[in-house]
Length: 133
Image (cartoon, rainbow, N blue to C red; front, side, top):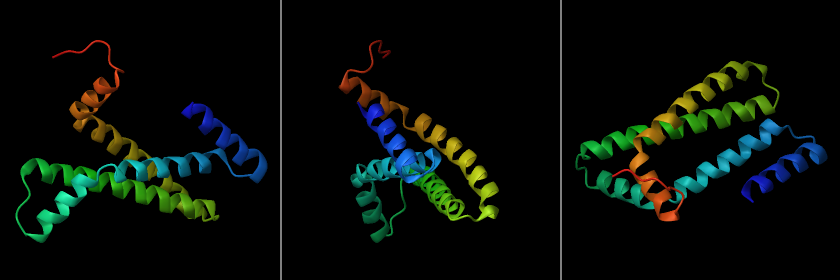
């Protein structure tokens, strides 16, 4: 269903408005990242609380903060360079390509680092059949 909706949006945007598939895909991805970040409100409120009290973050939280900051930085860099390319700035092309490789690496690292909660979430949804303990 979601895939069908995404394909429809891409086709409508491409055919009617002359917007490229790459631009529509990028816009949808930015929206998905924003939805993902809004579901992590507890993490952000805990981080803000610990920053207000000036206590040191636990080692696990420090690592997560660094990972998530790198991922968010890659998304922002990718979005800004994509918008520059969309507006016809040719010099943004190598930056956009490099940002994409950084972003793919950051996503891979993010998925590997969060594999336990992700597996638990998929198990609750019933998407995992063979579970190892």
